[in-house]
Length: 65
Image 1 (spheres, rainbow, N blue to C red):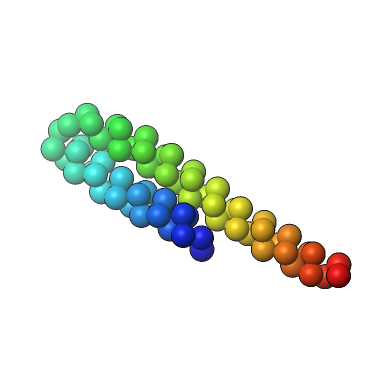
Image 2 (image 1 turned 120 degrees about the horizontal axis):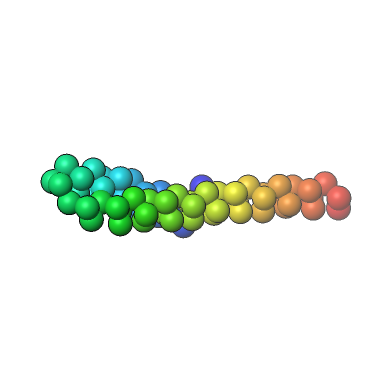
C-alpha cells in the first residue's frame, strides 16, 4: 500500500476517534471531524486505486515487450 494511502488511513482512524469523543461530550464540532473522515477516506481510496492501476499498467507493459 502506498505511503500516502497509509497516512490518509491514519487520519481517517483519528478522525473517527475525534468525532466519537466530540459527540460524546455533546459538542457539534464532531461534524467537522466527520467531514474530515470523508475527505481522508476518499484520498486513501484514490491512492490505493492509483497504485493498483499503475501495477496493472506495468504488468501489461511487461507482457507486451
